[in-house]
Length: 186
Image (cartoon, rainbow, N blue to C red; front, side, top):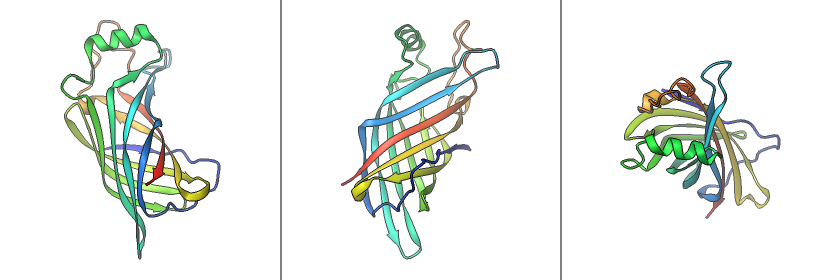
């Protein structure tokens, strides 16, 4: 099981309104980073192709809901064209067969500026249980919500390897996952 934790925001949060919240793809980034050792450089990359939705359901026991997020792994960038070209040559995400990574929740529980999310991440055709702890801030007017997350995943659990001479030892097995999305109530 992989666990990710959302970083709390500094502003006070109010409860989100029940309904479907769609990810604003122009303001969504999923990223990872890590260090293989104290002396190794920090490896990082971002995925800019993020899409999906969050459902918030009001019940007599509080707020619950669902989340469905898709990430286009071909949208990955390290911010360095040379590294991007190098990574594309050995395709660690097997993007030709599995261009989209998907996270689907099995349970979402909202309370006090936080959400607990259980679900499954499918990456490279491998599905692993992933639990998230989230924080959120509902914007003025209650029609936009910022969600920030961070945590870690074991890349080998998804079959991601960097078997390139000189690169394999630079990429850590455990990567820090960062999620920064805006969702809009529809």
